[in-house]
Length: 233
Image (cartoon, rainbow, N blue to C red; front, top):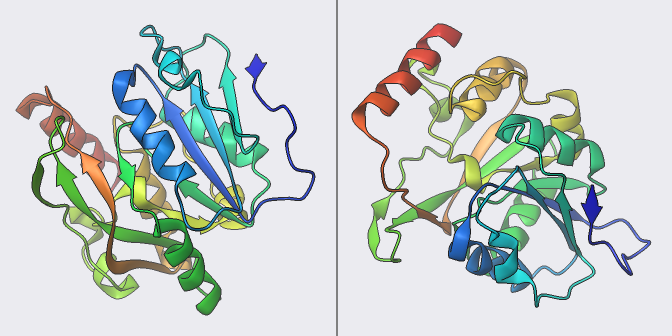
């Protein structure tokens, strides 16, 4: 295991950001820079490479920041396993997700932390997100609902809570790890389904993230995802 953790601060950060990557390519750099450019600076970022073959880490080879920890062990374990690894390593009070190809707006972390600190009974918070193409062109918005009642009103249909925008209390994630083995491409939906009756979810009305729509996801893949969601339910 290779860890880039020189000169890490001894004081625990406020937020741990988890970014598992797999063949992220050139999109990794803007994703990482969007965290580095946050108005809230008290964070640590775990970039955990899940057996990539494209040398994506070379795109951030010049980035020098003691808040960034890179883990590369050559194995391919899957998203759920990698997120659980970061949950176990995290030192922040809050735990946030960041996808390898997306872009967080500069005030994303600060807005989510403010909301969580204002509502002490809130376990998990998402934000609204805009969709962009692989080239960065706007494509509309991801579906989202704001209150816990709205988000959980029809669990058999799934939960409108964009996974890459999540931030929650670290203790909630430690209590509710992602399922392993994970259901096919719906790790987030399984976790929400398993926990919603004893948790409190919410979504910020503000758009705080640009979600890059991946190419090559066909109807058969979407059908398989839906089948696995139905099996969980």
